[in-house]
Every structure is written in C-alpha cells, then in structure tokens.
Image 1: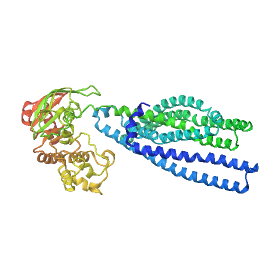
Image 2: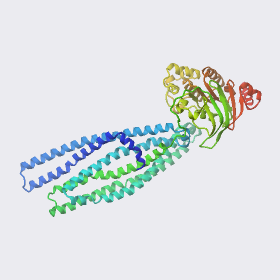
Image 3: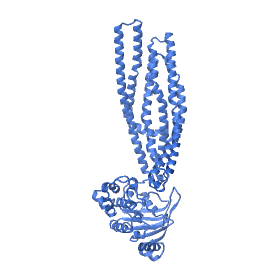
Image 4: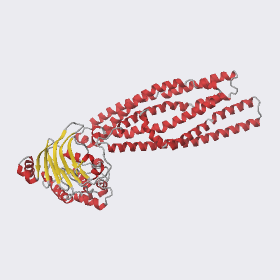
Length: 584
C-alpha cells in the first residue's frame, strides 16, 4: 500500500465530499437493515396469529404497518444509495482528472533524454491504463469498502442484540475467508504488474506501427507486422488469462462460504429455537436475510482486494515516472530579457544515452543581431550546437554564455521563449495549418499568419488547398510534402519574432530557387536577430556574417565566405562541387 500513499493528498483535497459520502453510506445501510427486523417481526406476527395470541384485526394492522415500513425503508435506501454513488464515484473522476494532469505536467518538464530512453507507448499506457486502474481504487473500491464496513458494523449490532451465540456461529467462515484473500491478493498483485507491463509493450508496438505505416506499406511487410502484433497479443492474452484465473477463484469461494453460513443459521438456529434459546422463529428468518444481505459485501471483499492490488501495481509504475527528476532544471525565477549574443568557450558534450562525444572543445562567439552558418558532414555535431543553445541538454565541460551570462543561470523559460527553432525533421501537429503556424504565437492575427507564410514561401501552397489555412493536417503533418512541412515550420518560428533564430537544415527538402527566395526574405526578417543556420548547402551559408565548419565534433574551418574560399579547404571543395552540380 506504500505506492498508494501518493493519493492521500487527493483524498484530503476532496475530504468534504468523501465525508458526506461516508455519512450517506451509513444512513443508507441503517435503513437497509430495517428490512430484516421488519420481516422477522412479520413472521412472528404470523406465528402469533396462528397460535391465536392476537386477533385478526391486530394481525392485519401489524402486517400492513410492517409492509409500509419495508417499502419506505427500501425507497429511502435506494435514494441514499444513488446519492452515495454520485458522491464517491464523482470524487474518483475528479482524482482521475487531477492525477492525469499531474502526470502530463511532469512529462512536460522532463528532459529530452528521458524521451529517448522511454517508449511512447509505455508513457501513454501509464497515463491511461494505469490511471484507470487507480481510479477503480479511489472510486468503486473505496465505495464498496465503506459500504461493507458500515453494513457489517450495523448488522453485527442487530445480530448480537438478537442472538450472540447464533451470530458467532454465523461468522465462523470469515477467518477462512481472510486467509484466502491474503494469499490470493499477493498473487494478483504480481500478475497485475506483469499484465500492465505487457500492455505497455503492446501499446508501444501499436503506436510505432501506426506512425510508420507508410514505411510498412512501402516495403510490403504488412504480414510481418501483423504476425509480430499477433504474437504480442497472444502473450498479452495469456497473461490476462493467468490473472483472470486467480481472480475467478474469489466468487466461487464467497458463494461457498455464504452457503455454509446459511446452513449454520438454519441448523444452529433451528436447534436453539427447539431448545428454547431463541424465543421467536422470526429471528432465524431475520438471520438468513442478514447473511444474504452480507453476501454481496463479503463477495466484494475479494473483488475490492483485487482492485486495490491492481491499483497499487499501477500506481507504483506511475510513481516511477513522477519521481524521475528532470536533468535540465530552472535555476532562477527571475525573467531576464534576452538580447541574443552567444559564446561557446571550449565546450564539450557527450550524449548520455549513446555515449557519443558530439562536441570537442568548440569555441566561437556570435554577437547579437549577427548570423552564423554551420556546415559539416552528417554526425559532425551541427545540430548538437543548436540543442545546447536551447538548453535541451547541459554541456559536459567548458562555458556556454548567452548575453555574457552562463546559460545555466538564465531562466529556462525566458531563454526558450526568446528562441525560434526550426528542427531538421519538421514536426507538425494534427491541427489546422493556421494553428500550426500560430503555435509560435498563440495570439497572432490572421494577417500575421499569412505574412509569416508568405515569408516562408508556403502561402501559395496553402491557399491551393480546398480549406486553405483551415486544412486539418494528418498525424505529424503527413498531409503536406517534406518541403511544405519545412516551410510551415519556418513560418511557425518567424511569426514569433524571437531574439534568436535557429534553423537546423530546414531547407533541405526545397528546391534551390525556393531556397533563395526564402533566404532573401529571412535576411530582411533576421536583420536584428541573432541567427544560426545549419546546412549542407553553401548557398544557405554564404551570406552569413560568420561560418564554421565542423568535423567529428571539432571546428576545422572558421571565417566568412570569401576567406574560406581563399583558404581552399573543405568549404571550398563543397562550394565548387555544389556549384558545378547546379550548373549541370
């Protein structure tokens, strides 16, 4: 139960509703327990009439009165049972809402490396399946626990009042029940954890398959993926069946024990009535009703125990993530305006998930409002520089300064708000094109959206769609071509009008003519902005104020276009090669 202690803060938050729910439950059970006493009294009236102890008029009056009270008690019990469910079950929905939001907010602050080492399907499963299991604990399990405790407490008082010895005999099977529940609960907890892990694997595979469906179809491997999915499904089914087999033991056990209790009541009660220890035959009938009223609460003990065990297994999985500390932490609450000057001083960095050393003693300075171009072969460390400026990772050694201040000392959110980033792999959300562009500036007007799209040279493409800017994109922007996705991403970055613009090879999917038009527009827009352009094309880099060339994480060339051409190194070779390809 240690894992479930995390939910105590939510129980405290909704304590008023829960207290009202408990009171309603108690009242409901008190009224429900009027029925056995009234039935017992009615049987005694019938017995007295048969023995001639009361007149016909008294008999009719007492029977009619008891029937009216039984009906009234049933109506009141029904009303309070409805209110009980509305109160306690509603609280479980509130807690489910709060817990999902807590998990989602925590996911948002976790570092990029966390998402590289955890699968998306597993993350989704914990915020859906696992939270659903926890809700069953804070809702139905809690409600039936309160219901059972209240019913037992009130029923025992009535039963002992009628016959203490018969009550003792009636409850004899309960210790056996408790031991059985304890044994089975431990097994259920173990198998529930296995089932949830299996569901995470299944969810991950499904998510990856749906995301990569175009690749699957292109390679014609639908049958292979279907077979793999079927294998995972069969494994999951078997684990679910293994859990269900254990859970299935509860209800037959409950029915058997309740049946034994009924037999005890009839036999022992009958013997006591014949021996004169019980004065009225109605007491036996009353006890039989008590036992049968306790049948469902006793049966739910097993079910509730199962729910609690499953919830504990799920909450333990949730707690694993909630206890994960973000590697990148905001060190100050002060919001400092960013001007945009950047300085790398002997910066080295190794990716924690792969141990690949991406940067080795990299040093350069970029004044505010200037443009830097970074070129180099694949894997040379170009994109890593942009990730470090956005503080998606912290450097291993050296110094990274923004406006002459160590980047770790800046407010993380102020820093990122001042950056417009266009990634190499353009990611668009399943929303309208307009909202994807406005993602960079939520309050942007329609004119601003159109202006940004025009500067990114994607406006004509957008108005060509039947719904224009209101066109809904498929997952990850699959509706658009690669070049269109890149240009929409550029529009999203420039509409923000940030102090720092980072372009990570974002023109690789557009033709050279469109590239030149976009660069011409960007030159005007970035006149007073600090801009870094990562590219494989010299055409994207030649107009930059400063150019660096990386190889294996080190700067091998540095200067402007003219000086690098005169040096005759990698940059000139690349320039000559690309120029000849263009002329062809």
